[in-house]
Amino acid sequence: MRKLLLTSLVVSALCALVPVSAHASEGKEYPLPNVEWSFEGPFGTYDRAALQRGYAVYRQVCSACHSMKRVSFRNLSALGYTPDQIKSVAGEYTYQDGPNDEGEMFERPGRPSDHFKSPFANDKAAMAANGGALPPDLSLITKAREGGADYVFGILTGYGAAPSDVTVLEGQYFNKHMAGHVIKMPPPLTAGAVTYEDGSPQSVEQYAKDVATFLTWAAEPELEQRKQMGFKVLLFLGIFAAIMYAVKRKIWAKVH
Ligand code: HEC
Image (cartoon, rainbow, N blue to C red; front, side, top):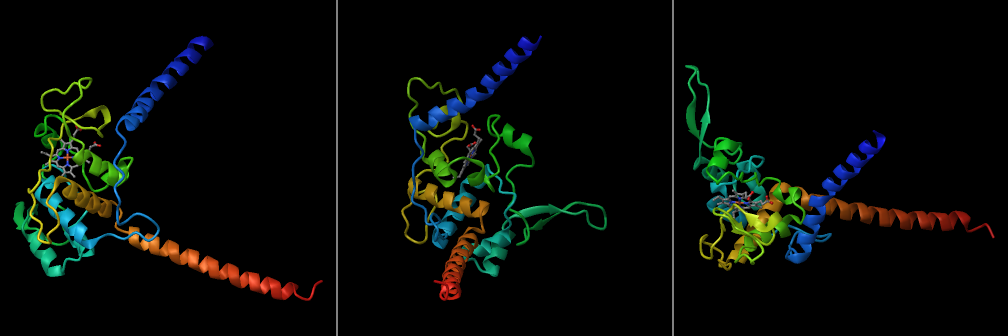
């Protein structure tokens, strides 16, 4: 009996390990691109122009399938938009609200306090429209996936012809960086699809980089403050250590 229990424990432990090791070997086959991000490093900051372009890409392309339920229009002030601009962007969407005094639900234009409007009423509707695959909410995607912004960039630029050892069924696409190398998201980006007003290249790589920057900001809007605070703390500790050293020398100066 004991032996049986032990064997089943070992077997289930091994089973638990299998997907992990499979995933690790995938990483080696197609390493994630190592993009240079403005928000990396101890003094990293978000590039406001890239954030605005990334929001344009999300809005014009990704928001057809992916919700971002945790972000509201007023959060866009961090991208450099004025309250009036935010109001007019929100007003372009229609929201259901209510019930009113007659007990009826009604439609109204969006307000800055509204969260981004989801493209589908619920997950089932989203899956039905996407060949059974759920487009994940993108609010926290850069935190939810190993590789973060590099991973999002990798997925968006990782399409191509499938090698012979990967079977791609109808409604699936080969993607280097998706687990299992097949994804049910059709390649969302094509060059020229989103018009940039600032003269940045309208290429798939640039779109992917900008939208990954935007999604990183959405998942971590406090990144700049966090890094600044870290620097201040280090500065304080440095000065404090210097003072304490001077005090120590003074106190011990008379003792020989
Ligand atoms: C036509 C609908 C559609 C559009 C447009 C679209 N996606 Fe997707 N996306 C999907 C679906 C469906 C999945 C789930 C795929 C799967 O599980 O095979 C997905 C998955 C993803 C994933 C997650 C992969 C994972 O690790 O699970 C990311 C990241 C992503 N999309 C980003 C984007 C971005 C960024 C855009 C805009 C540039 C975008 N998508 C546009 C439908 C779409």
